Image (cartoon, rainbow, N blue to C red; front, side, top):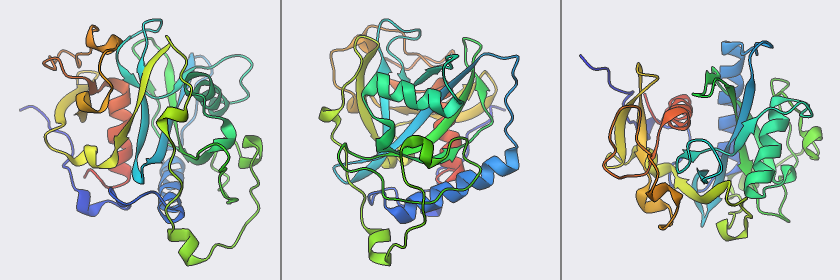
Length: 275
């Protein structure tokens, strides 16, 4: 019998899927990621080649979601949906430094705009043989940097290395529950033709049954791929590229699948959106 992914359970989510991200919801995400990293005991193998990506959470028009990109023609897997990120360079101080550098290069987001939530795993191998380390951060508009906050020692790079102040600051409950500022996709500078386009994937899309399709990661573990055809501007490289899932025909749709889809499904399971 074919295995099926975890069930979709929006009512059990630890954060709202419709209300904008707030400092309260970010705190829940940070605590969840910290607990998971401590439990998994993620340790890199120095004999492997590595890459790092950022899962960029953000508000767009007061809607919570994830910023994603469609790969351009100069990259492997052109026309596929991915996170900002890439291979670790010798000059990168850490895996997180790689994710931040690549995010700036690909979509024009400065490290000072990113509030680090943490990392999760286990880190999986890409089809190119790279061990890919995912980090989670919240994106602020330029000129509206993250509020001072404290982070646990589990994070690979502290906030001081992001150019942020990590001293403890008291927040009133009203401020804690106030929606965080939205970013404008039009204000971002994408690196074309490396990146074909960017789009915002609302959290509600993760529980929209009409968008979801069962895929199997590396031919075995089931997860939810997500149809994003209507969320991506038409007329790009993805329309003429092979964006099929792993041995599944997507019927001409653009889907979040593969390693990107697997990591998003894993993150949604950690946040109890999936059970």
